[in-house]
Image 1 (spheres, rainbow, N blue to C red):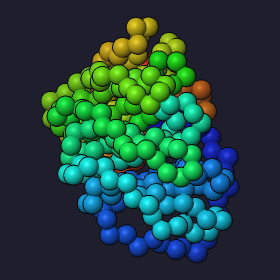
Image 2: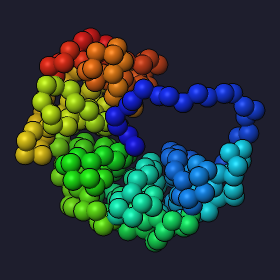
Image 3: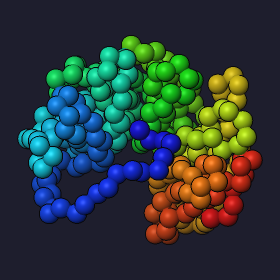
Length: 269
């Protein structure tokens, strides 16, 4: 999922590189065990050919020939995310379709195949990023999107049966062109907050959650002129139990780190 980063306990070793030749315009990749064989599989968003492709892991050393699922004519899928949307312990897939202003939901059957996708309309939003998290503490995954076309972020609450509520949107500002969003706890309350990378206005925007399940504008943090922040994540980088922010700045070729002061404010980049 997109959001809260914990200390990684994995130990990785370098192995000979075996790249997969690809000509379908891959935009993003996500990992999950789709056929329950204990080997990680991959799903790739192919924006040129308007589909997602499933690669099944084989013995930890190679992947199968892909199985492709169409996302719709002109859909231009940009990013995929993996989670269980209908609480059947089988992994499902969500894909942000930039071209058709929609979110496609593929419900997993558990044997590596998926039901025909269901499209959730996003108006004229041009979703460019998707994040999964339980936003309202009902043990069901919800969807958060960054919308390049309407300069908003949107939340669709999951019902636990594979369907979702209509979207609730929050403005990120004129010409902001949000490119990524992450969740975290940035102030002293217990409500979930949002951090947004605004590519167009060179800043990180914080929305604070409240007791009603809504969000209010908190603060805007500059990433410097021309930085063009493209991706954002959250983690405790200095082990003070406060969640900090890291942002990838495409324009300045730098990674920006904002350390949390614990009260909803952050130190300089």
